[in-house]
Length: 185
Image 1 (spheres, rainbow, N blue to C red):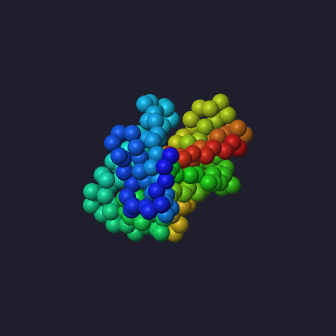
Image 2: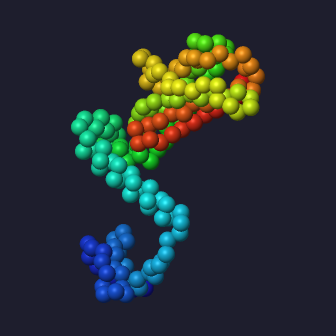
Image 3: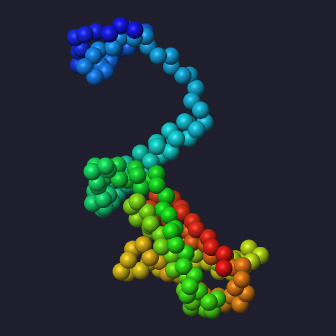
């Protein structure tokens, strides 16, 4: 490897075999590194995911009103509406709490859910299963008008056999990502 004392301001290739680049205040000249011919399955999957995120973000920003929504959520780290939209696609919502204190198994009793996302949770679905894993009921929770992370589901079917009942909350964001949490009573 050769090092030049008087650095130029650009990095480039000299022919097919020599790479020139600036490292700090020095210009470094060295043989071109060998190029991997194949990518691993994991690399291919990550590349596809990012391509999907980029396509989805461009599509979202073309929709009326969406660009303004994403622009309002920019931060020093996510400096543009495009980056916020890409982040929204790549990050799934999270169900942090499934609260069964008010659920008695009677019609009208409630299950409270706290769900968060880096952008916005658009809906929460609740599934109630018995101890044998059969669905008793399922439906959409209602978002709290005063707190956008809180959702409430009101039971529509009586559940007389509470021990072993499973309560599952599934949160969805705009790109269709899901986050789940399940508790057993």
